[in-house]
Amino acid sequence: GAVMSFRAAMAKVPCELTFLGTGGSAGIPNLRHVLQPAAGCAVCSDAMRAESKNRRGNPSLLLQARVPDGKNVALVVDMGKTFAERARAILPARQVAGLDGVLLTHCHMDAVLGLDDLREVQLAAADPEVWSVHTSTPVYGSSKTLQEVQQIFPYMFPKQESEGHGALRMVGMCSVNKLLPLRTQLVAGIPVTPLPVLHGGEYVCYGYAFGRQGTVVYLSDVSAVPEDVLAVMRGYDISVLIVDAVSPESARYAHWGMPQALELIRTLRPKQGLLIGMSCEFDHETTNAQLALDETVPNTQLAFDGQTVAVELDV
Image 1: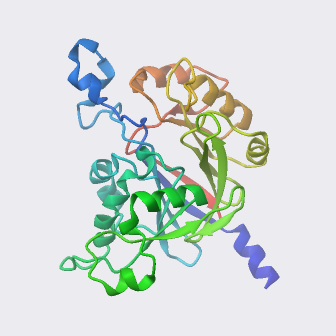
Image 2 (image 1 turned 180 degrees about the vertical axis):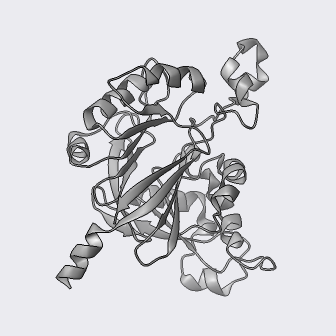
């Protein structure tokens, strides 16, 4: 038994991360700038093109991996207001039919409102002639986030199993799975560690580390990182560090700007740094050309919607 568990702990599995959204809560093109041509926002104008790398949905990440038992697993972190639109554009090429779990960072609308569209993803795993949902998708998060999301979507979280499975169900169905801060837990065979950070004042939001060594660290909404969480991250061997950066110049109340994000990248020294949560103050090509010249943050760029990054996770 001990030998088996040791071997299992050492297994590396191929994993692909695909960004379903790399913008802020408003998304890009920003509706205000679309309705206000006088603002003259070149980034939003460019983002009107479907293929523009400035076109950004709410922060969301798809993680696909083949776990040791041979099963292909698909998890999504956050399903915000733009989930369905971005999923239509990105998921077919990723050959996703169904999800094994949804990880929520917090209960703001840009993280949870797309849960209503989970029904269609659930039905994609069923036969084409089936129109009612018979299986629930596990939803993971802090106890506070899970309480709040059940108040917003009571119809998606049946109180008893019989409510969901017995009835003819025309809406999506979720089950509640609490994750404890800084405690590594298996989610569909993937080791996941919630990283509690601050997201404006004392509001706590989860970031997530994936893999036993913290191979992938995802911090989508952050205004401060507590010392104990930073200490945990310093112990990781990070291949990809994904960090919130709302503005090129400075932080805002609830979000880091690029200076703070780059400072974390310098501190933790991942193999690759990717910024998300960008407002229309960032032009994709221009900023990435600038970042490429910054030798203090090697291999760091703005992420873009639809981008896929391959890593190996320790499971």
